[in-house]
Length: 234
Image (cartoon, rainbow, N blue to C red):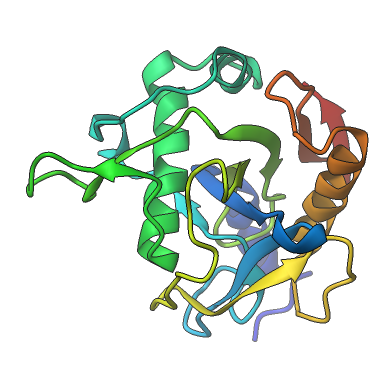
């Protein structure tokens, strides 16, 4: 193995640092029945290059065709505005909306949960018309330099009862296994990424402030600066 201090190691470090983050989206699906709030999490397959065998929220990268997915209802105006403005460059409506569409597409592909009415066409990209109106924009996190794969992930929250989702009906997939509901107020015994623990702490704080999670909110951005993870409100 080449030493990280040698020329080869330095080249590899520079290559890792130069990896451009790819847009991604994740859903914190919340079940507030039974006197507590639980969030759905699953274990990433061991074959994954990025975060193998760790428990995460359903989600994944934004695909090129996500902006072409038809939807049943649009994002709340405050959520759309925050998605567009929260960054070094303003996004178009279509690209901002594609992040939310990617989140619900991934929730369906990874957990078998469809949020929205059945699609009118059998050739639709997903078999339902995503309902974006109930999504809350909760956080954004950019994978620090030094990783073989980096993502610029937007985290959404969605209450299962508002979306008319039966919390007992979900399916494991090739992407996420051992799906289970986790009490957000418990310290999970599962192996979770550091950033997931941070986002969970933010979620707890937000629920304590206002259990309805209003759409009008400041959104924390987590990004590396001089080797340290920095939290900035957008």
